[in-house]
Length: 112
Image (cartoon, rainbow, N blue to C red; front, side, top):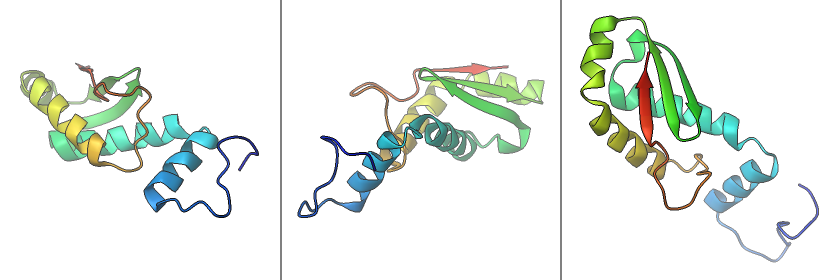
């Protein structure tokens, strides 16, 4: 890790969750880890993993490409519930590093 004010001293006791979070931030891999965690949240919460072609996460917006228009229409009407469950999933995920404090991780879902 880099030397600086974020450096963990030898005598400082830090929990594993905090240590992993600091490592992810210092190595600047938060965006890649967040993309993977959001994709996992989508697959778990939506139940539409087999219809999903791709999931991308940009600026608290989840873009989902689906291969079924019927699944897209059904998910369209469930967006608010899915968004709420995804935010709960990501809040409980220790690997997800929120870019902004206090606000939800997912503010919108765009289905294509």
